[in-house]
Length: 640
Image (tube, rainbow, N blue to C red; front, side, top):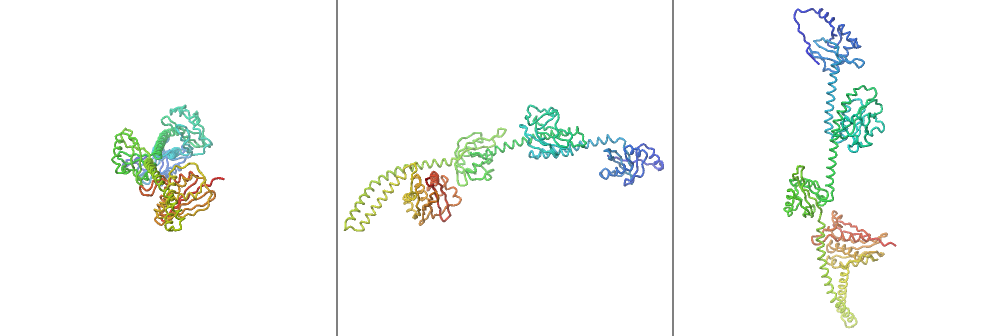
């Protein structure tokens, strides 16, 4: 505290000796020093004052100089004075007023310094405490998680209560289980659990003892010490909304002098702030968990889920939709929902979205959706998304992929057509067989007669032979065709793989001729295998047909068989254009085909794989663009 020490001087006043006499007889403890605070003179009252406080005049002046060196801001300006607190041995202090006038510094001892210093100290301590608590409230409010919150509280406790050991424990309000622990000091073994609360604190905070988790929280008259080397302690429960969120324990090492009652009041003040912050943090954690859970539920659901807001922007596009369309989530979110709808469908879909925005739901609405490879068909049910105020926020569509179902419907219709054609073909075959049987029989009779006549023309004999062979070939083909179309028996039998390959080549003879390619056989001697004859023939018919379609005129289909251990291996290799690497992993998928529209169903290789696997075998493919493709079948030999 600084004040103006200037005095009124009049000319013709008393001589300096008069001031010296006054200086010595005054009861006020006074001393005079030079500008460097070296003692020049001290009156008897100042000497007595120093003796009463267990020091000397020289020591007290030196203490004033040291205090001003440590706090230069306290040094009085010219013509002013200030109060300086001087620490004395034995944890005592004395207050001295310092005044400066030119090169002279005057000191005045204060007889009752205690009350002022105590008040000032109390005010300073209160201001410091309030400042720390204010900073703490900001820190815990900004904490993004429980770990960060506990760290902020620990920092606040260290600032408020230096030199103390303390422990911060955060528990789950429902179960009482420990979720966070911070300790400054050496905890006794097992001291962190259970959480022990003081009976008086439980009463003050209106906690229900019956509601506290049994075994996790204990209420006693006194809280046991948690740390080694401490003599006494205080604690405060963290209570908010009548729920227990933990406790803060603080203990005093031996020899630490502190105002325990004051510390307990401040600790309770701190605990109230922390409890509210912990409650809010846990509520935020719970809300975050619920939100994340719902987001994951939508994202990983087995159904197609799309949500659009009032501006028709996509805000949810889950994994199932992404996998179906081939579009990444980032490519779709924020875009107009109509960018996913083909132009021909937009009018129809727009009416459904408009109805949903008016609060009307629609079930089982079928529509087409754009995909990276074209379009897919989906069936969806729509519902309105409402705000807490009941206003329409957007529309949610939940559906399923019906592309496969629609393709199956088309295949069924196609199969029914083929069945009708098959019935017609069977009738045609029957009509062909009757005259061709007569042609074969008569040509054979004429050929035998011509061979018996010596005068028969060799040219006529050759023509009759060709007629007879061609008619037999037609009869054999019609017989095999009817046999191939007849449903196969499920019962396997011992068959020769090489013979099955030859039969398949016979079925494909017209395809081979039309494609203008050749067939090369590289057969090894093989033991018989157990198989459904007609099914394996179908496998090789499909593979040979595909090979012929993949080649230009002049190409070659190579059929290879061999035995490897307990397996027989058959390979169908062509010299065609090959399969693009991106399609190799999909060629066995149902309805996948690289042929032009109307020239392939995409079911052939899927059926082939199913038949091979039903025989306990496996089929693999290797292909090089521009060089050709090879399908390898491995079938097990029957066990001995």
